[in-house]
Length: 309
Image 1 (cartoon, rainbow, N blue to C red):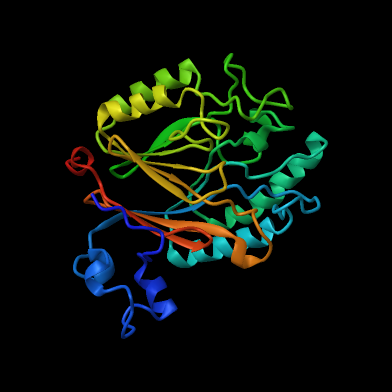
Image 2: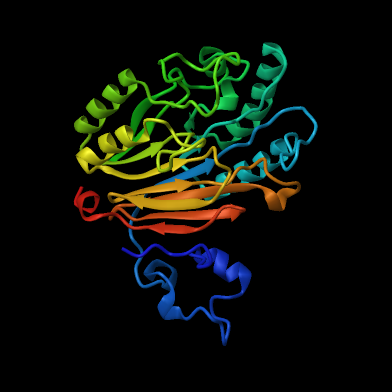
């Protein structure tokens, strides 16, 4: 399998905008481009998703590199691009909002950013991040968005989508009202058992969304990530996991599954320091991620097991 580096821009539209696709003397030869960028094949697209993460919206002063108030404007741009691209689903990967001193204020933050995100006018999915439930409970957060559960699955045609909730302490208690250490992130046994049963039932290819990382150890990783990965690997249906939390663009492939971490919308001032992506899912198992602003383009090829589904 070939994983294209971040310096290789996979989006034909992006290459044309940058004026590099057919530039004489370019260091990137046509033979080095992925087949889809060269126009040699056009796999059938079965779904188009818009993805954002870590907007951390709050009506509060900038802290370090985090420009909380600017996420409202950045989200408006992302929604406009998603609408133009005619996405069919929208996903936010957690830390939709940041902390407030009171429940009422934090709900106010949530209502403000949700009003903008709702402009996508397509089904929307919300992954809980640790900042989403810093002052709120999970029930209070979910009451403000069109979603009843913190973890669940849904089908879109032959595509199986799984939303996970890793906002649990090691003792299985839900994060809420500052009762947790953000480095103590876990998928509890009940959720893990549900996940295994859910993936065993699906006949299609699966994509998993989670806030904290499943591909690393340490502060940003889910503590029982190895056990979760074993469940994901067992059925051979999972193509990729998309995650946030770390505020970085990173990609790893473990046992045939792509783990893609996306950069945070909140980092840096100005629209150029935003980040959002279009994810195209193709019938042959190919995933193409077109990153805007600080997100990275990627082409993720299916392994032999998921390609056959």
